[in-house]
Image 1 (spheres, rainbow, N blue to C red):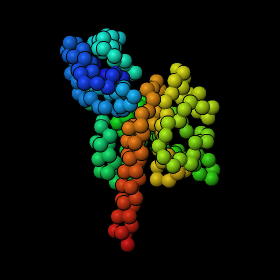
Image 2 (image 1 turned 180 degrees about the vertical axis):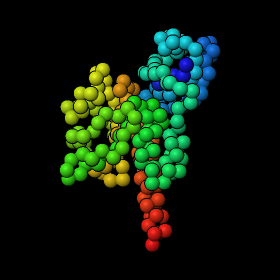
Image 3 (image 1 turned 30 degrees about the horizontal axis):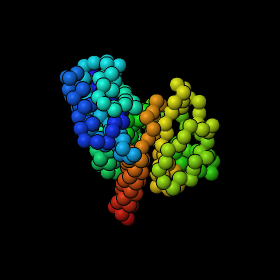
Image 4 (image 1 turned 90 degrees about the horizontal axis):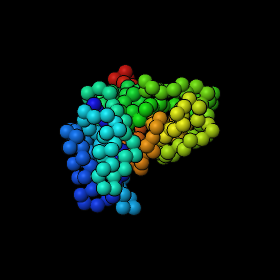
Length: 225
């Protein structure tokens, strides 16, 4: 079974080895470890692994390491490892005029999220541009957080439809998509919250996708002219 873990632990030498040792004792195969954030003596890491135990047993083993706390643990279906943000950037560039659609479709994999969507706030209200497979409808969505100048977390608020947080939790982040009134959203139904490095990834991926679309459109016009 493939799992995605987010753990916090003391930011000191050897702390992570306690976690990897616990996983090794379960005969788990660690596919990737990524440092998400370091601050105030605490490190937050994402771990992708394959191990033949249930989620409760995995959590218990990881938290047996001194100081380790599991912030989130999700089982990931399929046999393909999670998509890296850099890989997604390359996919967007390769798509040309389909870059934004590719971004939205694959962002949940790259950022460990539940769904993603792109929208524009026009004269007639919200215009949905693209949605990932699990994204809810966006028609009629209120957008008091637009215009958007930089990536940010969007705390739970009254403008969010009830369907977004049916289980009581939702973590949402957004970044400008070419202009302040157009944005890409990414959401986690059960957390964890988006960290600063993830917001930076989201903003950079949005810039790459939009830049790719613009360049592709220019090339089409140049060939036509």
